[in-house]
Image (tube, rainbow, N blue to C red; front, side):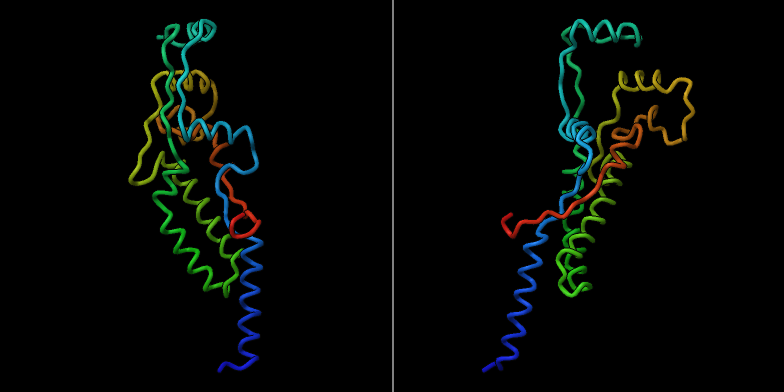
Length: 190
């Protein structure tokens, strides 16, 4: 029969583990603090389709060599940088969590912070590379390239090809720099 001090110690550890799981149960990764960039990121993640209006046709007619006609579909393909990162790196993140739990003596919040930092690095890598090693995203469309080159005309570039390059998801770096993580609390089901 276990001693009462062993039972008490186990109960204290169990209580500590429950308290930690109540205070930090998940790590949320994505565009956390900027609603405007989060909206833009949603369009990148899921794509969109829009028909060209007469007003838009007039705007394009003054800017590009081959403007889309009224009623033509403008299509931005989905570039699921978050979902692709989860698919590519979920097992890696689970391993990071397991190692972190050992390193921190079971501190769930500290372990989730380590997972959050690793996930942010991986999501940023997906954005910077235009996809994961197994899931490359569609390059920018010729219309986008033409509009971006007009925007970049007369501006000094940093050599990354952000505005003028064919690589998707990276123009100014705002979305890349907005990726972060936050610990969510509220209990195991919360």
